[in-house]
Amino acid sequence: MASGESFYVTTPIFYVNDVPHIGHAYAEVAADVLARWHRQRGNDTWFLTGTDEHGQKIMRSAIANGMEPQEWADKLVDEAWRPMLKTLNISNDDFIRTTEERHESRVQRFLIQLNEAGYIYEDEFEALYCVGCEEFKPESEIVPGEGQYEGQKVCVIHSKPMELLKERNYFFKLSAFQDRLLQYFDEHPDFIQPASARNEVVSFVQSGLHDLSISRTSFDWGIRVPWDEEHVVYVWVDALLNYFTAIGYGDEDGQFERRWPANHIVGKDILRFHAVIWPAMLMAADVAPPKRVFATGWLLVGGEKMSKSKLTGIEPQEITDTFGSDAFRYYFMRAIHFGQDGSFSWEDLSARYHAELANGFGNLASRVISMVKKYFDGEVPAEVVAHVDDEALLEIARTAIRDAESAIDEFAIDRAIAAVWKLVDALNLYVTEQQPWVLAKDEGNRDRLAAVLATATRGLGVLAVLLNPVTPIATGRLWGAIGGEGDLGAIAPVQALDWRGSGRVGDLASLFPRIEQES
Image (cartoon, rainbow, N blue to C red):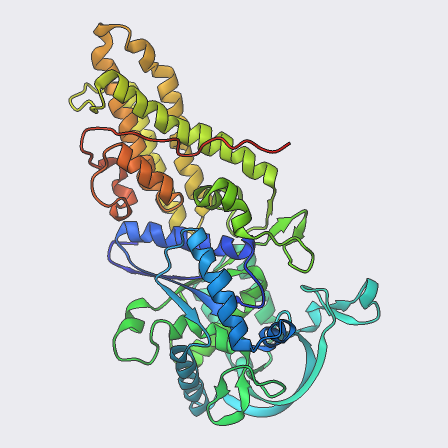
């Protein structure tokens, strides 16, 4: 993607029925890394996140906590969801709440457009509804209950009984878009990623689409259907439109045209809403579908998908209080193959923190800067004679830059970090093999010592640029310590080898201090 091009990335907007756990944080960090990387490229970047605050699940959570739904949503957003973004050092450009007037008015405007185009009709409907999913479930996702729910039909995702709802609702003619969707998937093979997610969606659409109920009358916590005040908009229709409403759909200021289409980061359990219902609604409105829908896997704890009800939900601050936000960001982006399920364990987190961050990256930075200070009084050697070993290291740096850039284009964040880490390992090996502490003992090796430390410092600058989207606090400190000039967040990764410095290094406290684990 060339400098100046638009890059619009979104997370799902999350239900405010409870506080966030690391599964929510995982999506936030992934989108943040992509946004920071594209900003450094010089792309016209916009990063949106937010909260989904309507629907039956929110209403019931509020009642259970003795509050009105709006009061409950305000409390969760102020005390949990916004603070999570600060805890994880998230650089979102906007935060959309579905209870905001800017959202509600644009949702109504969009629905009027679909209604006037003839894609909405009224009919009676009866089906099993999962409140947890906020969805009428297809037969493929209804299974016999076990244990306390034996004899009942339960949702395959939440393992809880569903409710039989019979209402007269408004429907969107989703079935009319089956062939158009399949044609679009065929013509845009990268629209849904990873490939496993694409295959799942194609198979689902090929099996046949049914029209979608887009309103409810059994409760009133939601946006009113503009032509019928007795109905509220189905929460998923309401929620999907946040990607439009936040960038001013229907306004004349040009922001929508500047930003759209979006790149959506979603959990695989909500893939069909984003890859089937959402593009069909857009087609009905004569608007281009999103650029990409990327489905992340689940984070597993003890072999199970995280769940507050099963007491496997871990809050992000439980990790950041000990390891810091940079380590949180690095671990989840590095240890889990983006797009697949991944398991979290405290043992793996601690092992990677110490082996890769503390010893691999942090210790490398400290050693190089300390030797520049010790052997050259803090002045980075400028005029040096290049050696074949130095050129070999710089070639590894070029490869790391190229491979990381390519991986980011494919949203393969873990692969991008792995490419950069080859340079971390190579730079550690380079310092070990060149032995600057031995060279320093003989004045005759002064020129070689200068070249080694100049090359190593240059390598640190490359790492600062490439790792800044992942570990912005540590790289910011490193940038200052090596005398990096300019805004680190504005240096394009492809130009990482061309960074400029003041020529002097400064003090650098440990980037990732060792953490003593309780036995």
